[in-house]
Length: 119
Image (cartoon, rainbow, N blue to C red; front, side):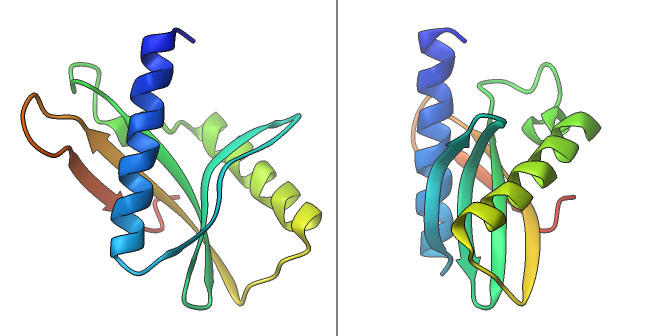
């Protein structure tokens, strides 16, 4: 991944984390990594544990950011969530998988769309 793409992704994750915190969610982990991959955000929403994939795009020429969460990506995220639960030993009444789309704007704040229970 290029440095520019990494910077855009990191920006989107910061924006998404702030947006979700302002909505009342509590960030437990950012960029949790293991040999199998990475979870962008792990949060708690009341009694619900939330695994959140953040997708940032500068344009929608190739579709919405959420459309980049393919069937294979969903499978991988579910595996990573299972691994996170095993490694941390944390449990929750229920688990949810969200997507947050971030579209940076030329001027002003980025557009943010939170898609709870996206998959």
